[in-house]
Every structure is written in C-alpha cells, then in structure tokens.
Image (cartoon, rainbow, N blue to C red; front, top):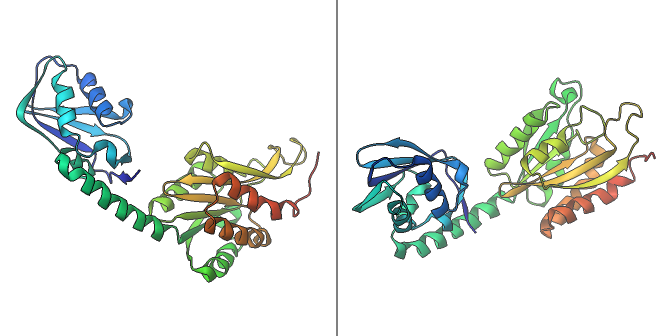
Length: 293
C-alpha cells in the first residue's frame, strides 16, 4: 500500500460546517476514524463561522485510507451532536491531504499513479547508500575513517551510489536523527560503522532501536558484564527498517566492514528480510572476535 509523506502540509479545512456547543475532541476522533489515523494525532485547531480546521500530526498517511473520503467524513461529522453540515460542504488541504476531497471516480486513477511514482522512487532509493561513521574518536579527528572508501569501492563497483552520511558522536539520539534524516532524503540503505560493542559508549544498536523497535539483531560475541569495561553482554550488529529502506549497523574496524559488505550486497540482491540479512552478515564476522563466558 502506498504511503505518502505530508511534507508539513498537515491542515485540513472542512468548509460549510457550523457548530453549536459541539464536542471538539469528538470531531477530531471521528475524523481520525474515517481517515484511519491515530485518534491521538488529530486535533481541531480552529473554528470559524462556516468552517473547522483540523491538524493531522503524523508524518505519513496511506493514500488509500484518505483519498476520496470527503463524503464519508462529512456524513460522520454530520451525525455528531451540535454539528451542522451544509449540502455544499467540502474538504480542502494545500498538501497531500487534498485527496480527501477527490471525486470517487478519480480515486483509482490517483492510487494507480501514486503506486507508479512510489515504485520509481523506491527503485531509485534502493541504489543509494549513505555511510555514517560513529564515535567520538572519529568526530574529533583522532582516527581517519576508511570505511567510506571501502564502501565506495565495493558497493560502487556493483552499481550503487555511495555518499558520506557524515560522522556522529556516541549519542544514540544523534545517531538515530542522522539515520532518519538520510532515510528521508532518499537513501534506501544507510550503513553505520562503529558503536556496536559492549562498552557504555557503544550506542548504535540502541539508536536504531529508537527508529525500529522490532529491529533484527545478531550476536557476534558474548562477554561477561563487569569484565573490563563491558556493561553489555554481547557485541551485536543490526538491521532496522527506516522509511522505505533499511539501516545496517556494522562494526567499526575496516577489515570487518570488508567482510560484511559482500554479504550485504548479496542480501540486497536477494531481498532478504532483516532477520535473515543480519544473520547472514554475522556469519563471517563471528570468527573475528574472541568469545568469553
């Protein structure tokens, strides 16, 4: 099903509506129900003599849930106490949500065209890779990042467009924000390197979990908590879903990135699910780390 981004155009005007002691939260909940939106993310933000303004506080909607829903929305609102809907009432928005008011006969055409555009964007994005280096030692220049060079060599050599996603310190919200931004900019694959270990500064897996709580992880090595600087029991890599694409958390050492990338390339070609992909990447990496009980 085609999801579309609202691009900050989140207001919906319902014209031809008059209210008399109406329950505004009920109006918002009713609109959310008709449009298959979370009831806690739709609000009435303005009421005038002849119209009501709603604000939809979600970044994306499913086009099929909102296109052509004007009649259903007006009927549902008109059934509420204190809400009078005129015969000429209509629904408008300056953005994507304007499709609510589309004539029913045009909805199949809108959805078909949206799917065509969506497929084209996904195909384009799937070949765009951004590499994010994590770690304070990278951020302050103590260590030179060679992982971007390796990614350009290996992924670029098989047709991917590889760009730098920049360097981020050991801060899970900063990492998550950078990954989300890159995914939103049309990178179908975001690779992070570093921050997957057992120390308290290693926050990359936690960062991706903020974006995808159901992310797939694989253990590379286990350690005893409290041994040395270990505050976590395992070194893990991960694959998370981010928007249309995925984020892949790899270790920082370049020789491990070299081991992982051919498997990642094969997995992308085979369209492996995140769980299968992360496990495939983990296999050649497990032999590079010592295990401790």
